[in-house]
Length: 324
Image 1 (cartoon, helix red, strand yellow):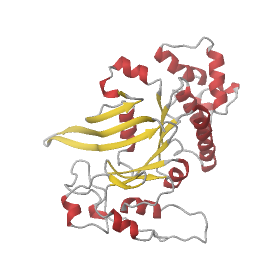
Image 2: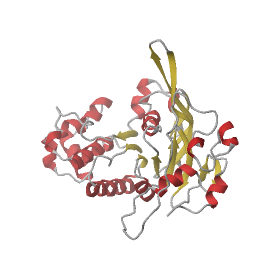
Image 3: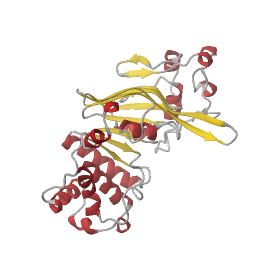
Image 4: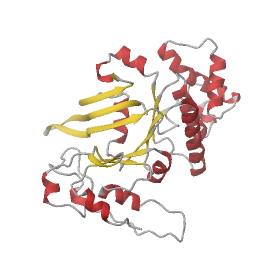
């Protein structure tokens, strides 16, 4: 498969100044590297605060990286001027988490869907027809064009957000928890819609979510983040080898009452981005941790086919049975 996105050693540090304490540096994303092939769905999971949404904004250069490289369709986005970056965003779009705040309440849906064309200075020859095409693509009828956001449900607003992202015919869409605020039945409708659009239009997705079971079902591979770093890249149906990923998987809800799971308790808290340890950031919460883990941060290395792990004891962890 052709590679469409390549992220190499991407980092983002925020400097904050506090009274009497001087400047402090917060490491939000640290040396992140991964690739996405054309037509692939790459899932990104991890605890709140692990850097998922920051990574999404870095990929689209909505915020600037402190270091690292982002190659999209062979071009280095870091070298682009603001004008070139605006033009390139025709091919790179984002669907935000909250459909209630991502659409301007003062605009009709037609105005919201035409906004990307106005920003790019490419208003279609037949605006009304293009709006209807976009609405049809996401399963909404023509009557929605003249509605305002407050006249729509959360699922309908999210469909409008997806339609707006599709307006300029992108090849990559970053989805930042697009189903988090929706009912379960509506979530299923949105996921089915996204899958259909991907197959029909040849789209590539970066799919960010807290729902590990959804990511494992929907995505071709899963990127697991912890404390700003990638700790594992897991292929579809692959067995995790990192202790953190295994703990996440053991907590996935099983709807069958006959399938009871013993959930491994994750003691302690994730380290602060202001004071990261020298070694592995997960060492203080890990049952496999040794002195080596406290002294050296493990690199993300190949473990199996399409499987990478950042753990000194990945092989030992992998041999342990999954908690069930």
